[in-house]
Image 1 (spheres, rainbow, N blue to C red):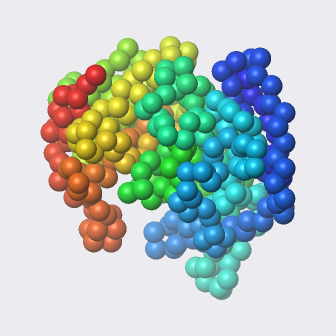
Image 2 (cartoon, rainbow, N blue to C red):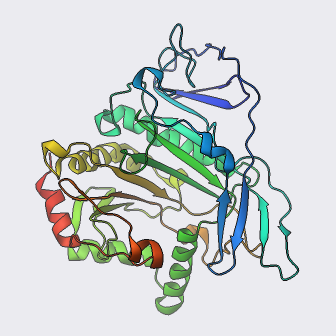
Image 3 (spheres, rainbow, N blue to C red):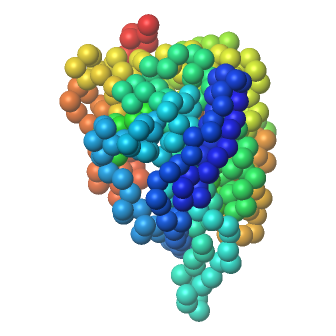
Length: 374
């Protein structure tokens, strides 16, 4: 993998990752663009003990551009995009409309009681374009290309973990207009959050409580229990296990764990990295097949869960309740489609009370995902 860093016209960084070590990247961004301005803020919700990002500048972000104006396609004569080169393998660049950006600043209160706390929305947000082919999807990549993306995720995790103000690194892909995707070119994103996310904080609490009660590791025990039960296992590899969780929130939801627990993508060994592309591509292709040919390319979210990097004890932004080495890296893949032509909406119970109601029994979902194997 060859890595080449450059700058876009407004000062944002762009990084090319190429399969060939002989690739040379010299194209310049010739667009007349002013310097980037993005003002992010985080505000604390005292009832839920959660941080919320406030980002007015994102209201102007690109929305469903025509294919010939896609900002993620390679540049060509007469039309410059976000990616100056005429072709590329994988390109990563700072988001033009980031949710979090910049260096950390002092947390402040707006009231004497300390209920209205806010701070700069420090951190970094990146776009990862998986391929120069506008009409492809991740599932269309070959194993060599998918392995390159995995190595990119790991490299960007390392880079963002060293960025001032970044507490947690989140690599993810949203696919499909039903999910809310505004660019159809195959791509994902990486967020460097300035706090430990609420979902991860809950996992850390559960992990600490389980350890105190049983002396075991909750992630290890959960994966072992799913493997022993067997009926929800979708793919069993030598180094990875994919299963529909016992209490799945979504109609079709798969969790993918490496056999050897590691806290983040950086901890994956070569054998696990080598096996990942085949298993992940097979999962994505099964998601595209479960609803039949007329429902091809199911909308989905693919989310890497990694341990936070910083020590946030005492700063009020999500204390670590278990050592980070006890956290288990895993990927959660789910679709909001529950049946052909039907979507699972987050309605009153889910959105109002965070209580999910799943119309597809996890055992049935796992059985269906096994039936559509290649």
